Length: 289
Length: 277
Image (cartoon, rainbow over all chains, first blue to last red; front, side, top):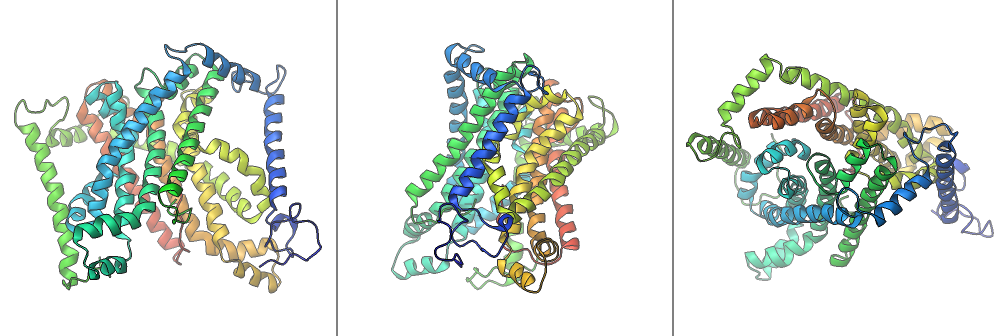
């Protein structure tokens, strides 16, 4: 493994511990400090290119990509003044409400259904084919039907988010329960546990990391789908801001909306990772991405 | 068909346990269809505006194949969608495959690309629709760009994972035998990684297909997504259902064809694939 010669360059400046030193620089895993330096330089270069290309006499027209300053000003403006009838905070809350609502509703249905599908074969035989038929239809394709059924109010968007989130909830819960080591169940049986005790104390607990992973994927799907739904049927929300800004050619606001969407998506992902570590600290990170 | 389920310890015969699930599933789907038909057949229970009867949907399907709706027949819309999808996905492969291989093979390059990639990764493909419309107008390029944005990350990440997963001992063995870096990559690492890469690409393809529908709902004058949005505007639930079914069936067909292609072209077993979805 570690082939680093003792007394060679200090650890933090050189390649990663364990890197194969017989390889050339380009094939070697960079050390932490090296990695950070390269990453920072790369980000700085990207920023510099953006800044210089969008100067008044630059290569790129501000209608195509606005200068960084303009994006920052748009952000400050959004914070201080309402845009399209709501403040930025209200738009964010509008988006979050739908996403969390649809996601929770999907969990309420999908989690028990998935566990039941994993535990009782008959439930799986009955419901799995129906899922297999519905699964290839992208959640977004439900948007027109949702608008037709429910109008362009909140309920249409909650419905679409629900559709997007329910599949990962169900599939991961089913797989989690299905893939449990039979020996655990048999051990519990031997020790006299009842069917219900096994399900609640052995199966659900062992399956917890996969269940949370399913919740994380569901939340990601829900967020992605909500943005699309807000492009089509909304009166508030970040996707709604983005589409309107694009129609009125306010590039700064459009980029701010995209950035907030991205940051919230990242926060969801990080938050769910933290939840995994909190409810199932024994699970190795990186299971079932 | 002949898959053995090792977990079935109840002593049933293999034949019975293979047929029973199918029977239950068919019964459930049949019951659902029957309920759908009943709900629409009983007058005044569910208005046809909300849910048309299955027969209406089939008739609408035939009508859409025969005569144009919103500028094209069903087939025409499907061809337009497939074309946009093809362009976007090919672009994603053309860029993502070499880049993914390079990222796995040259770790310092990974340090260069990762920060920017991580910044952009969390922006969902559809959030790019408004800006793509500004950049490219309401053209095929916009649609293809959204497909590209949806497919590209999966292309890169899966390719990179597939190459990085290859047992380093193989590369070292090749090196010991005198192969250079490029030759090791081309002759040893890539063939081993190929099936896993292909599995990852299939995910990219289906991501692209899903995103295309969303893009077509917002912009464009033809395509399956446009068809269902027109169905909504014309208050025709049967058109929407035909469109949704076509989108689902085409998505399934694409994946089936790719799976078959993988088995023909890369018949050796993939290393345990870690999927990125």
